[in-house]
Length: 445
Image (cartoon, rainbow, N blue to C red; front, side):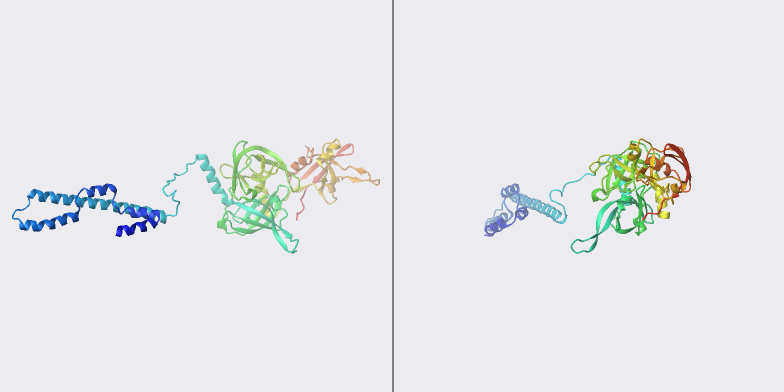
C-alpha cells in the first residue's frame, strides 16, 4: 500500500529529485544477488518454526545442517550491507555534486573546465609590460566651449573636442598639443584611474603646436612619463603610440619609424616644424598630444598630425621630436611663454613670389616699431596713383639662402633674441644688405 501511494508522488517531482531518490534503491545486480539467498527475516521465521519440532523429537538436526544455515544467513546479511554501502556512497556523491553546482557561481557547462594559462612570446610580454608601465602617465583631455541654448538662452559648457596628453612632472604639469586646447573656455583632464580635474593653461607655443596645462592632483596619482632622446633615432626601429582615438581612452598602437627629419606646418600659424618623426603607427583624431614611445618605454615625440585625405589614419603620422619639445616645455613652465626671435615682418605667400619669377620672401608689411622696420626694410605699398609697389624681397640671412618662408623660419629658429643678423634683400633691380637686431615675439593672448 505504501509503495502504491508513493508512485504518484515520485512522478510529480522534478527529474533531479527522482534521480536523487532513486539512489536509495538497490541496484538491479544487488537485487538479484539478494533474491537468490534467503533473507534475514525468512531465516528467523524458519528457526522459530523448527523449535517446537525439535523439542518434540528426541533427535537433533545434524551439525552440518546448522553450519550451512548459519553460512547462508551470514552471506545474505553481507550482501544487504554491501548494497547499503553502495547506495550511501552514491547518495553522498550526488549531494556533493549538487552542492558544488549550487554554491559556486559558475556556469554548469564551465564548472569542470580547466583553463590553461595563456602563453605569450617574449616580444608580446615586452609590449604588454610597456603598456602597463606607461598607461598611468597618459591622460584624456576634454575641450569645453561656452554655447548659448537657442531656445532657453542659457549659457552652457559643451565639449567641442578631445585629445590626449601626458604627465610631465609631479607638480601636475600636463603636456599636449596646442590645437587640442585651442578655443577652450574650460579644460578637464582625466587620469588613468578615471579621476577628473579642472586644468589651467600654463602656456603654449603656437608655432610648434605645444601646450602645457596644470592640474591640482595628489602626487601619488601623478606618474611622470620617462623622457628619452630623439637625436639618435633610426628608421625601422619600433615605436608605440598611446592615446584616446575617437574617445576610446588608453589605446595602444604599434609601428616603426618610417622617416626622419620631416617638416610639417603648424596648424595655428603655418610656421614650419622641423625634424619631425614620421611613423606608420596608427594615429587618429584623439591621438593628438599623446606620447610616442620607443621600445624601452621612453618618450621620443608628441603625436601631432596625420597625412590623410579622409581624416583617419592612412599609415603616415607625424610626431614632434622630444628634443624640440623639452626646451619648449621648460620655457613654458618657467616663464609661461616661449621667447622666440622674429624679424617683425609679414610676407606674401610663396606662390605669389613664384609668379613674379624671383626667389625669396616678399615683405608685405614692416612696422616701423619692429626690428625690420627699424633697420630700414621697405614693405609693399601703393603709390599716389594706386599702383602696387613691391617691397623688399629677402634673398638671404647671414649668408644662408632664403628661397621661401620655410627657409626664413628655419634660419630664425637657430638664432636667439638680441642676435644681429645680416639680411640681404632685392630692392628693385639691385641688392642691399641691412643689419637687423632680432627681438622677442610679442605676447599672445
